[in-house]
Image (tube, rainbow, N blue to C red):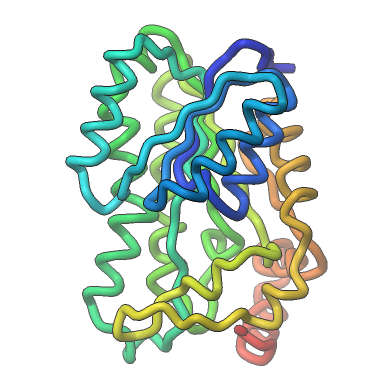
Length: 262
């Protein structure tokens, strides 16, 4: 089991959803927390709650699409003398549009936020990670395991995550990775999902509204990280699609075409 107490975790997308819930799980284990996200107000709220749980916490605004803001974060980490022991890459955007109705700019934006921003951060901290080690947990999705309607760009970005973080863990023994694979979790991810023109839908999917509890998701995820699991599927009945995809592909394809994608 990993030791969390008096360590430091850096969380991207730490102001809401799974990132927020995970911040509290780390804090309850005695891990000091650095939170990043685009909006300062929710980050400050999460930071204060982490502090109330008895750890140190900081927050910095970072836009994963803009490498200059990641550079500023890395500069701050070095200037403050922080050692990053755990990295949780949670920042991301989803999509709700048919593949050929989606403008290429949307595909590019999802890749920048969901994939390139995270690997840019990892590579920017490579000297620290190679010298001292790190455990990277990255939030993927069941959509990172298989394709699914109205999520082509999202699926592509999450598939890329699997390829990168599985490979880096094989190449470097001092870098451990856990790929968290949630099903439908009760967060506002669908409200912030982009339509084919790149605008937020503003709509809560029924599947998301009735999804797996986000705090329970975080508790399962932190246990998987503590045990050094390479992957962990988390969620309700919808996650049955993962073994169907692997073992009964014809049934998976039938269900994927006919179950509601919303």
